[in-house]
Image (cartoon, rainbow, N blue to C red; front, side, top):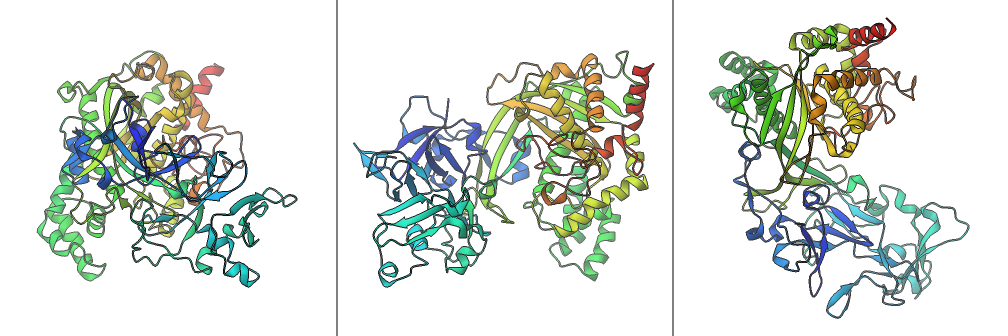
Length: 610
């Protein structure tokens, strides 16, 4: 069953096919999707036929998101033309150009009652224009007014008074190189023309008086809303045009972790409620130790909960979900099989009892869980554009309030690793490790308002995150799954009564039957110990050394140290942090910092030489 994309603004709705997973990410509400030579944008959930969206149950995720229900996007048969089972998409951008005769047009032409993507002049194929305009507020995006833009630098009265927008052409200027300056919009009525080179400046539209309409392309365009943000020109295929705001949870039995219970205790504290929402000052400074003493929670946890909105804090939301999952994995590995169910089938591996496992390795990675089946539910909360801080909800923030989120379920398998807590804590308390971690703390202070920044970063998170990437790169060649089909979940926290130190690498698909066991088999000791040693060995090598190993900051916002595409980066769809917070040096060490796996690496090399 495949969801159908209904192309809006057509006299008779036409169907395009998308995979079910794509309707959540990467082509969900607000996203631009290219289908063959056409371009469409997903419309908000208020335009969906709610009756065809079946409920999807995942109580932990529903509670974390604060909604009554999750619903699956409607699906239709391969040859179905029933518009009730289609998701609405609107053609965007409207402006297109003909590949044969270069004519530009923003009109939708119809033939035999259906829209056509052919040129009205020569019947050649029309291609969407490359650029759109976005702003930093509300997730607004709009077409460029190419008629006005092309006439802005008019040189005579005839060009300034020209109102013709049906004879614009996009031409390539010979001898002008291969950049944007070689592309020129020409008006054949008045000979006004302008090259696209000026679009490279961020302020080009605001300097010319363009205003944001405060709308999405599918909303009625006759009543613009108030929006004072400056417009920016971006390529419609750029990742800055759309960043989905999703949340996922593994469907586990109802297991409440001690950390979640402690957090709930803080939220219900009378003193906490009295000062919640107050600005930083003497009152807050007085309340924090009092709440901490009354609840037993660390002061930094109390301060974080006082100064952030738990419902809006994405990192906090993820932490809450991970706490319950960690508690379930922890109980299974401790022998409590009552926690499992048909969609959460986990059992302990024979690691590290199998002969041949290095004692130094067994002392660091204490347990491995074979996740033979899991169910992951992923919900789409909204989206961001460009440098937008608060995400735009999937219903565009209707007055009635959102009662459900679109979501999908996926079934798969995985490998879970639990690390020795005493070894982790002793390592991360080393002053040299703390000094190296200061890099991310300093960067986080400068990027405090940016999405995805971890304010209270622990060294163990960078360690486990980097190891997960190195393992996924290894597993790609032995599990039978592509790198983009693998995902990670990092459990890293030394707060509260149940510290977390582990990771899950898993794969999932839309098939209700799940996957075939190629990944979970590698969690057995006879395979896994070699895989883990290989990943540690990879951490010591990079084809970009010494540049990579000696880096003082690379990647997005310089939030990586010794990590680059040649050694540690993976597909961004597989990483929960968009390929940031990575550092190979924390695994293997050097003269300035002790590596967590340094002893393992030395023992492995000594055994080979012996």
